[in-house]
Image (cartoon, one colour):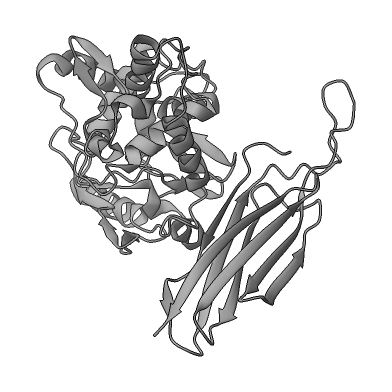
Length: 277
Length: 109
């Protein structure tokens, strides 16, 4: 009897979860099909399906992302193109000096973050690594306009490709740390990422639908602050909302969390640069 | 001169005669309203795009006057009926006197 009641409750809850804006719509950007839902990877054991954050947005916000001209993020991508060929630093070099073909970055975003020589690297590390070591220039701020413009430009080269982040081998330990952080309750509201983005995605939080917290579209243009937002910047926002002290951008905690979250989106397409509210 | 100003325009490459096409334009501009004050309480001088014009083969298509309340990176979208092949010319007039220009060709058939 109890089991039966629980079952009914479970089914109602599930039906409630599936009542968001456009779960059966599809996303095509500039003629290219973007996978906005996929079978959840085996290591995301509490999810059946993974959904892009695009699914949870209103029709108006969704349509902004369907055309590169309407997508406000492309103002910043243009800035990225200028920065790419701008000479900077003591070596008098620009990005374009070595990376002659932008399209060579195709596929890179889909595999980030990844472990190289025992260190977990985000896209921001690769950019700053080049700036410091090869160009002799100052590193950019993690969530600064230059950095997000550049990561958006590089990420765009992989748009539409399937996210496949490696979580075995050297990455396994860090991935486990990330998972622990995802399920750890923190802050005055005593909440974990999972409380909102796993248990309640599709439900309303104030006047808005909660998403699964997928990061396949980052850096993302947010209508609320009219700029590109980095993954770590978004983590900070979430942590402030639950009245917790945010970890540092570019710190070990956020790096591990980024790896874990990216891996939960394995199977979705890269959407960089996406538009959200 | 306002910094980092960059116009963008989207016009179809070709259209049928008599077809109505959608033209989208955006100019990256800070559109400083002249109402804001800086940290020292001094007014930040107004710096906006005050006029936008589109011509087709020398004939005017649209002429817009823009006001200080218009937000950053003004986006203007309008429709035009194509009667012949030719060239669209777009002009943005800045408060400081500079004019930003962009041209786009369109074919018929």
